[in-house]
Image (tube, rainbow over all chains, first blue to last red; front, side, top):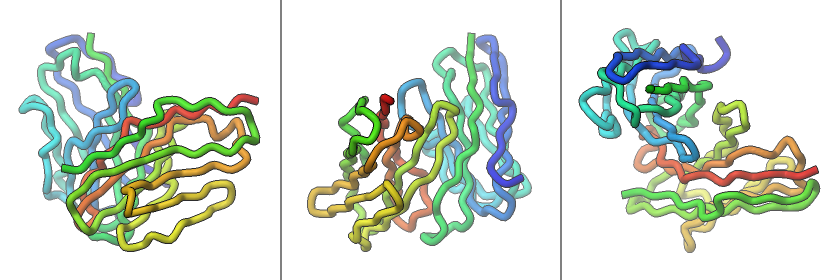
Amino acid sequence: GAGVSQSPRYKVAKRGQDVALRCDPISGHVSLFWYQQALGQGPEFLTYFQNEAQLDKSGLPSDRFFAERPEGSVSTLKIQRTQQEDSAVYLCASSLAAGSYYNEQFFGPGTRLTVL
Amino acid sequence: AQKVTQAQTEISVVEKEDVTLDCVYETRDTTYYLFWYKQPPSGELVFLIRRNSFDEQNEISGRYSWNFQKSTSSFNFTITASQVVDSAVYFCALSEGGGADGLTFGKGTHLIIQP
């Protein structure tokens, strides 16, 4: 597709359930990022991949959060044993290159997660 | 650690007025990148501009202009002759080092353009 796509767009989970959020980056983009955006706040960085390598996961809030990008394209963010504080919009972004050029990040529409 | 401050939580102006959105940043790196993104009600973040720390030239793109001043650590965004379609939340963001890092966002400024 032309842009970054994410699925599902909306997800409602009961507290304690596991969820998996999918991101399809722009074709050919090397870098992929996950962000968490709470209501009324700016996005906060979670983790970063360069191809299949997860180079930075410093923003993941707990060990219940796990991300992977096994073939260097599609990425999945998994949240285990969801809690109410996990309710947020999860944004995925991709950029063309790993270095300083073409480092504009293009964002997907996000997945709105609501934990009841 | 890096930080981005957008002190204006919400701005409301009447259509055709000019409006400036403020952004102040903090970083210890000498090489960094600054960005502005627009988030309309649909929720998708739209890239507007990127600036690197070595390029202090101001930029104009149509009704949009950006003023980067390293001396005051500011990267302000001005919309001239605002239109209702400009209504959105605008985010300023910072990336340190080589520019491939995750972005640090401000809290955003909600801009309301009244007809």
